[in-house]
Image (cartoon, rainbow, N blue to C red):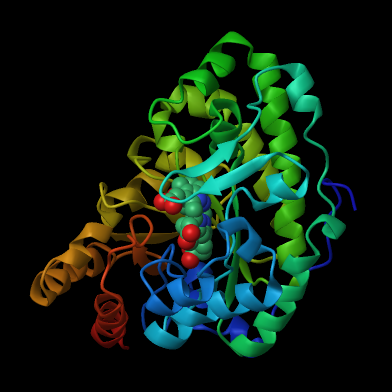
Length: 356
Ligand SMILES: Cc1c2[nH]c(c1CCC(=O)O)Cc1[nH]c(c(CCC(=O)O)c1C)Cc1[nH]c(c(CCC(=O)O)c1C)Cc1[nH]c(c(C)c1CCC(=O)O)C2
């Protein structure tokens, strides 16, 4: 199927479709505000560290049994309203043969950064056969999860490009921005290529049974709105458009994106993720009507005593009171040193406080 054909509508079973999480994404009434956490599967959990012992991050993403176990761990422990597929944003790039690794404590490192048209030519299409472990793990997960929805995800073209062009994590994105300003045609072609790979990867996940998808443009906050609109939004819009026909909610998230929230909604999201810097009522004004919001407790608040966590959580819930749809989350991922019990208590607190 080409990127432009509309796929057949792909809907989960009725009990999943009726879950608080998917209802909130569709801006329908909910029995309680649904909660999940970015990076809920990972190093904050001792059971995660145990099963990952001696297994590299990328290797673990390619073992369906391990992926299934790690994805289920936070659902069992915290009672969150959705699971997020255990993987990493660089997995599709690895799957098409990019020589990269995830270095512990550093992040993705690319052996040969993409700096020229010849480098771009190395990025080939992704097919379902490149990621058989994704289809297998999601098959296992949807039967194990019962009515709990599974969120699939991918890195957005800009965030993927930032790793590919820099060769690793960066604070300033100087090489990526140098290409964006200096060779806009190469940049546009690179982002378009990444949009195709990303769309293909999301389709594999949805067709295997993911009932929502999140596009992580974690580092888009480094861009001015005019640059985002001209040089990044078209590629992200292409990804959202490619999966629109499935009818599964599409979440769009980035960090430090206060000035971009309207544009991130415009790119085609059904739900816009908000970090902790903009209160949700203000974020709703910036995003405009017709979209749900996700967020936005500062992840570092979880290091404070219980009373402080509850007070800050009430602030988030109060600012969400007038929203059309709200999915509770942190403003960015769970930090590795977080006490898992604080996360469990937070889920309970949001559920109790918002029970209707
Ligand atoms: C930017 C980004 C990456 N990866 C991801 C993003 C977007 C989200 C965000 O903004 O945080 C996305 C991601 N990475 C991982 C998940 C798992 C699902 C979940 O949210 O629970 C998700 C959704 C697992 C992971 N991805 C990574 C880990 C840690 C590696 C390990 O456990 O050994 C996990 C659990 C590695 C990774 N991968 C990446 C970084 C920056 C790192 C951290 C490096 C480190 O501190 O070791 C790239």
